Length: 311
Image (cartoon, rainbow, N blue to C red; front, side, top):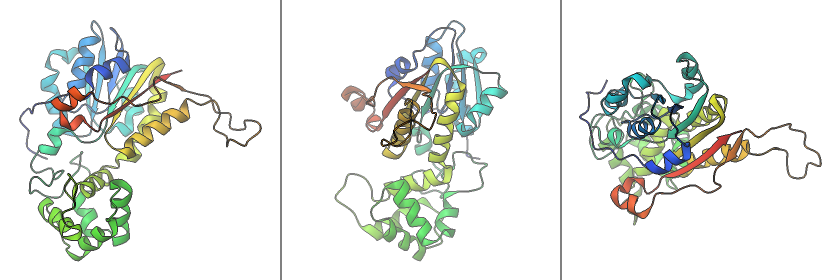
């Protein structure tokens, strides 16, 4: 268990856009599947009073502790659950929180997690190679780095990090094992590919890929999206903020699929799938941060917000 973190400065991404996307109204029920420091949750609660309720979920117990500080004025209208949003439907049922009028998923890693020494999410700090959102989970990044085969490592780095030097990096990792610290892993990757003419550090994509693999982020997202449809009330809204193409592709394809009346191949003369649309797209294009928001919060630059409404 990591030590309790001091409350960091928190700027919720696309805040006004999220409130509009969820169509926040007084007296309604909302789920924040990635509670984090509680920035989005606090604004949702402020705009859903009187009688608005929020269920906040986060796999990271540190996030729950910090969110309790942010939401201290809303203890009677907030339920916080230390769990993974992959269990969304079960969590809602166990807390008698159905149907829901809005569900938010703000994906990826929070600034607090990234900047927390000892968590292993960033190579800016030399710390154990951990990367677990849930510290009770058995699999850590060091297990993947030190025990997976070269092919499996290359597969993870290529598929989750979209890193073109994935095989070279995997080979260098194998040759330099054991690797138990973030500094050694970053150094190994830099030795493998050198300093490229890019703004980002050569280890950035590999670190992201390992974090996604450790926390099963893409599989959990796909599962949560399916469950969200079952939890939403008629005209309830689903809003997803993603930060890289893999997440955004899953959210986009899911919303588009669930907005169609037929999923049969285009050359099928008569529909045979029997699929019925469950969602209506609020916008076909993702909403991006304004130049002003990016200037205030540079980490928001890659954010993409997609929204759909339950039919």
